[in-house]
Length: 288
Image (cartoon, rainbow, N blue to C red; front, side):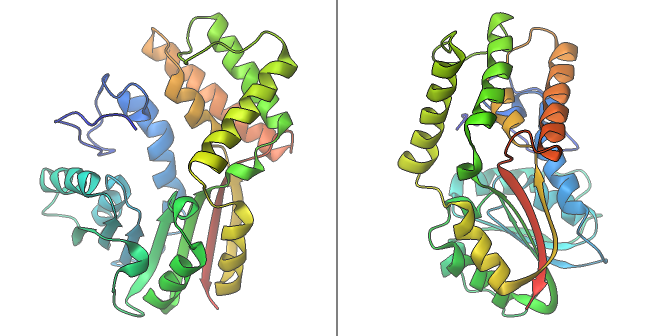
């Protein structure tokens, strides 16, 4: 994870450059908008009503919670990491529009052990948190209990195990083109042989997410989601472009933005035409 500068303010309305966060999209305002801003826009599609009570599980630095509060909702953000909760609180307190937003609070807590009010929330958001939560069914049971009878769950999460050889081949072509332009920073260059390079990408991917981090597989998240919630929406979204952006280094800001947009758009099109496997899903459901 990139180190946090002392003045780091993860606020989608106060974006600036933090060059020292070189492995994070937050390093440039246009990259933050294309990644974190896109996550907020996705969630916003499913936030209906006014003055909702919202629980943001795994809120991280709080950018999503802050935006929802500005929209007039009453938001509690939970995260188990005290350092990023401190950043969220500092950003909240320095918000120029704090007198006009809904209630906003952050709390450091392990969600599965946290005691919240049963049927106390209109909306529970779990964004990129379930894949690294031990016993995802336990976390989703907790979300189910916390939601009102007409409440809604929005779950956006990483399904690493969907990654396959064809997807790895596409990632190879993106990386290789950027490497040849001198616009990609990585520990080592990929082999020129496409088969060897794709094999290495796959090995490194599963070594990182399956062996080192032991992330939950898609089925381990999907089964409890569908057992507890009635699907209103399900879709796959581009996410590999985040990984490319992390390592992309283009001297011109304008060119870097266009490259990032192009790669994101290409990934979206390839997902929609089933040419590559997506690794980020969006599930929206109501209580069964």
